[in-house]
Amino acid sequence: MDFRSFPERIKIVDVGPRDGLQNEKTRVSVADKIELIDALGRAGVPAIEAGSFVSPAWVPQMADTAEVLAGVKRLPGVSYPVLVPNMRGLEAAIDAGAMEVAVFGSASETFSRRNLNCTISESLQRFRPVCETALRHGLKVRGYVSCTLGCPYEGDIPPAAVADIAGHLVAMGCYEISLGDTIGVGTPVQARTMVATVMRTVSASQLALHFHDTCGQALANIVACLGLGITVIDSAVAGLGGCPYAVGASGNVATEDVAYMLHGMGIETGIDLATLIDAGRAICRILGREPASKVARAFIASEGRILRTTSS
Image (cartoon, rainbow, N blue to C red; front, side, top):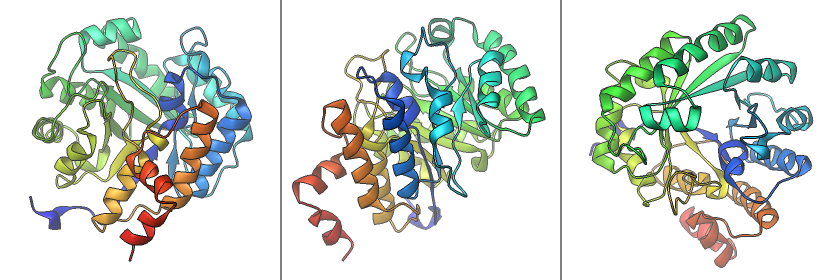
């Protein structure tokens, strides 16, 4: 692998406050969510997914997203996107002052039916007016594609199916498409092949990686794709979350682990790792568990010496 082809800087999108917390069983207060988002901003994270405007009956953890957005200290240069599944969600996001929204589709027909309660085609029809209205109001729109490297119901997903839905979302006006290994089963060659296939339809500058770490492959999958020109990575502080559709899923790849790896490769992120680890430790105390991040655990065990050693 030619490391000279790797980018000099990577933008990290921390999805912990949304994709992470929505799957946590412990309810987190509005004040604690605001503190988490503000702490991530202080750590230098340039994009923080702040919540979602979905039905409280389906995702009760996100019922207070409007209050969270109202309380966040928005920093210059930092974006705070929110997920919206339909027009009702978009209207709520606009009322709450959101400046960026995201729509969430799937490359798996069965997953789409079970998770979104509609076919892939129907989901795209649902997203079209959402994107049009959001753009008309001056909001940026991001698109998610789930199950890009495997589905709990269908198994392997053809890369061409991922490219097809990604292309539709770009055509609707999504400025970026986040490619999600929702159940965390992908491997490096599989991940690189999928991304390379999607790049025949969507440019690398419009793609992001969103890999879960269920099988411990997320970091390797990221490295496998870096040489393709990808410059945006989704991750969650402390490895928050998990997938309800995969037994034993360990959740999103931890932001601490991604940042540590990238810094060690000479790739800039703008993130202060020690401050980021503190943010993860704080939310994990509220959740009553240890961070899933291996870097955070090593930092805690060594009382911070591991960062001083690796930076010397």
